Length: 501
Image (cartoon, rainbow, N blue to C red; front, side):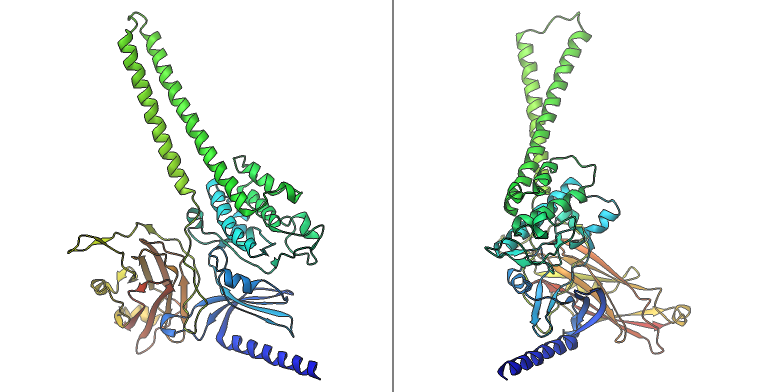
């Protein structure tokens, strides 16, 4: 009797959770549906409407014991942020609400044969190694690393901010077990031990990472990463790198060795070129007497000086290359969303990148910190809408403008001839993550997203207005800009009225 009551209570609790999630998160579209579960793109209907509705990924998985709670506690920028997770024992289901990551999976580049450059591959390895090191320290294995599970947000190829998704095959390390009981993963990427021959561990993820990067570099690659990837994909786990940290160290060493050797080769070429000039001069003018001791000494000094200058120039080039290949800057950590959460999806790359300039105090002469502000400049078909707001540093959410539409355009029934563009500039000294531009008339809504905007950079978002109809009394649109970060948005809300001429 007691067991029956416990089961009944569990069913009621599971139903309450399911009902709550269904009422709060409205499904926009199904991303993936299979016997293993359903993955959907949803919006939070309980969020503050004045800032637009944040977008998330909702997973309903037919599995238990997945390490999503541990991922929520880790909070690493390489993985999607987990905002909510719950297990429903009666149905054997795991529910997850996580960050939506805009962009393209690297499998698209593989299909298009748009292979990674060695620099991109290096950044990818170092980024994933930083995430895997943290993951493995918490006793979690991903077990399904492959191109389709690595997202490339716009700008990731230069910033290195690749994201590893899909932890549906992940598990925690089981100490003392000799082999796995759940044979998950993707054939061709999973190591031999993942098919039941032995217990998987951190080295299994490194095998899959090695296969993935080797494919993404293309069949014609023969550079310094090749022996490193060969070691990652050894059949015997004992012959692989024993941790993600050791793999990252090997990649950095190969990078420095490659550029250092290149510098020495170029310096040697420069020295040989100078020697050739000397010989050419000697044989070109044989009738001239050989230079005296002082002349030879001066010439030798000039040669040494030229070689030294060339070596310094090459050294500077190496240092510059090292900076370009350094691990990516970290995104700011974020907490789980409250009822009015505005967390959403990263996407587009910044269109410009100039670091914010610190101002100096008129009284002390000391540098003042960069303003904690994100500046939003709005345009309609290229015409500025909120220029008068630039004189204010405080946010203004009650601004508006009117757009007069020619009668012929108005009679067409829609605003398809118009578009709204927001140029979002990060004037602070911290990353502004996941900016979103939303346009709504109360019945229809269009949303577009952008990715992390680094300090001093500008991202441009555009929404065509073809889905908004013209109405007799005029069409009233609300333009909202939201994002994740500590910054204040200069124009969070803007009203735009369209009237017939």
